[in-house]
Length: 292
Length: 292
Image (cartoon, rainbow over all chains, first blue to last red; front, side, top):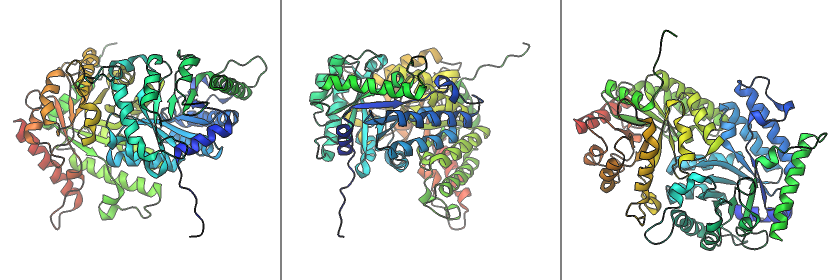
């Protein structure tokens, strides 16, 4: 062996990408047929193959439009799997294009299984080109570690942005922590062996921007953890909430934008792909202003 | 309108099926390529289409072999999705055959998402023929209720059979409950509106047979909840553990068998499909003996 290339490390890769793009923005790609630009609407909305083709074309156009301003793309598996085998095939092509574009690629499939099943899910995500996945932490290490194989990354659900997440995540433990804080501590512990050159582990955390009273505590409990942050803007998360997710500057967090970027209200005469480009830039600039 | 057919109710349907089959056995169908009978091994184990075809043929043979002794089949999505679009197509055909066979069909995909994504997952499971799915409860009602649409059922992960599940599920809350018990109470509450004619709701619970000290308490907290019970036998759950999962007789629980049925060690000269048939009967008889 005369050459050595460093093994893949998802958190280092993502950190480098955030730096190069000067952007901590993650575009959430969750296309739904009835919101597509009119030219892309499926001929027959009851035909799965037509629908899968339409959302694939839209997704590829979105990738092109956002690549200059986003660090990462989070692709929602459900939107594609909805359309059966044709949807899965479309998802694979979109993942491949996302990867080829240079974006960090997150497959948002929120699996939570163990053993051989978890290994299957992880292997298929890697084979399709995803650098990261999203996963449930409820099963403990058995449900988490398989997703970190081969230097790949996973964002575990720690504190979600939806209102009914409180029913479980906000419960108080007898030791004073909340359930979400206990999950955070588990994430910190299981992430330690994979902390990379940039100081972050390959086990990240989903932390909703809407949970403003908890973000600082979660950041403190997970100092070496990348946060994937939904809920900024329309869902109620503020600039201050978002700022608390970062460790310093634009390090340590990815802020996601979905509907505001995918379905902007363009000025008359602006083509839809340009409107998406403008919306991605505008969102990325907003985040840039917050972190600087 | 001169005829009325009762709307589909997953728990009533499953209860009727258990009664008709005189069996509370659920066969876990999680085929892996390297354990297939030699005649079914893929020509090229690196070719996804070959692998998908092999596990499909095996799965369909298993369905035929177990239908007389099983009430339900739990089909592990990961084993199929591992093989991309071809795997998804195979999964859909296996689900269709399972449904046509008269078995209650559980799609074991352990999704945990909210809103439109949860609706997508639920709709695709229904469209593919599943009566039930498996889901995560960590996101609360937003992640659960979409899976109960149109009378369909979902088994939420309450207490899993794997060792590392304790890290979160066994933690004590300040009110004296464990995290798993809190999830159980949530399942009871969210299941109430869908309690059917047979006394069980469409929101079931996964409860591992290995958690013997907790089963009685969980059964008490979830009196109208169907239990889906992995972990009996090889994983350590005993006959007494299993008995405690039922409400009375063979009502209220499905006991799963996977590897012991899929990969039996046949006597010399016994064809593999016959060996699977024998293993399913033997497992079902064991459960019959426990509940009677």
